[in-house]
Image (cartoon, rainbow, N blue to C red; front, side, top):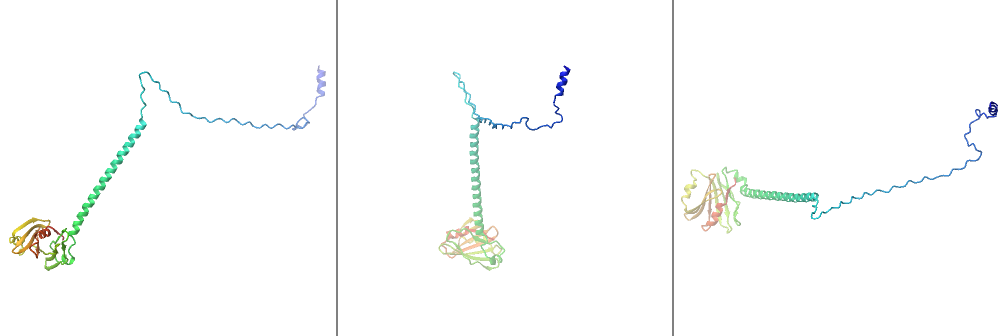
Length: 248
């Protein structure tokens, strides 16, 4: 037995000193390997989320299920109603504000108009010579005209004239009240006078002898005398007497 093992060992090939072959061990040329194409993976179909089917209401005999509350639609309706009333309220406030503004503007306009009519009527050449208040007929009816014939005839005494629609002339004299110029004593000479109040003061209109005159005792102790050249103009004279207002 040992002899057989020795004999086989003598014929064994020693591969330790042989180079290592990296090529194929077979002398046959290498056969090309078949190319296998990758198999595409199956594409998953998109999932469609279907809405859940509504639950079927189960009706019981003799009983009807209540309808679901419409809170969402009710909220929208209340919101629309609130906006509607809010718009109406804002529009009402705007109309009231515009109306108040127009009323205020008209009041200021009328006030300024009346003020402008009674101020700045006399030239500086007149106002510089007179220290007492001056009076001017304001808002006379159509056809009346205040003539631009202002004249200081004496120190502190102003003279000018007015024409009515019939071109009757009225001479106006404005002067301060003094001991020698007292309207109360003068007015005792009127025959059945007509006495009335005006914006300027107390007016007395009537005849003194054969002359028609108007005497106005103002609140600022100024005396206004209006003397028409005709005795047939009592109504026109009273209209002029009513129109005097302080201008300076």
